[in-house]
Length: 191
Image 1 (cartoon, rainbow, N blue to C red):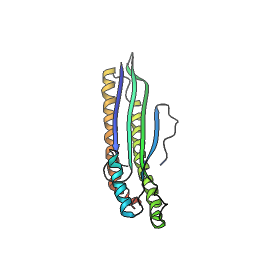
Image 2: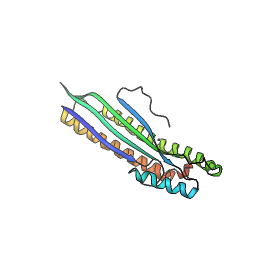
Image 3: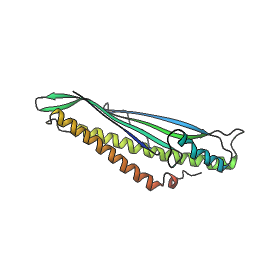
Image 4: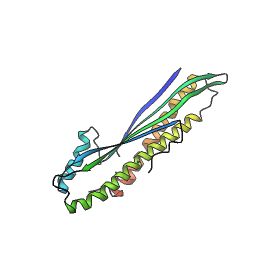
């Protein structure tokens, strides 16, 4: 019998990626940049606001972190019940950030505002990533803690419940992070 649980966790806007020391945890991260070229604050703000919406990633903010969390496993019946075989939790993260490339170079006054904003925005997005990494690691621990005395059908049900709890935990923590940081503005992610 084979089980597969997958969910897409999409959020607006994570410290260091997880170490690769756990063979049951697969992690990938990408950075994707969108180009803006405004030479005034107003033009640049308009471009930032419109850019993610044009990629189908609209919402508040000019950065976005998208996570895809999944778990894969097979069931192996045992004399006492059932256990996972080949258990893996995978997290794929894509962080979307702006890249400012104005024609004719960067106006000095605007550049002095851009760099601190981009640094703060990057830290904010990495905070979203960290919340997702924590949720994925906790999911793996919860799945490993399921009793092997359950039959395979019972183990499948408990695995689905653990996945749902992981998604819910992530959503609650991520929403609280957005409120606490005011979508990164309290961290300095403002032009």
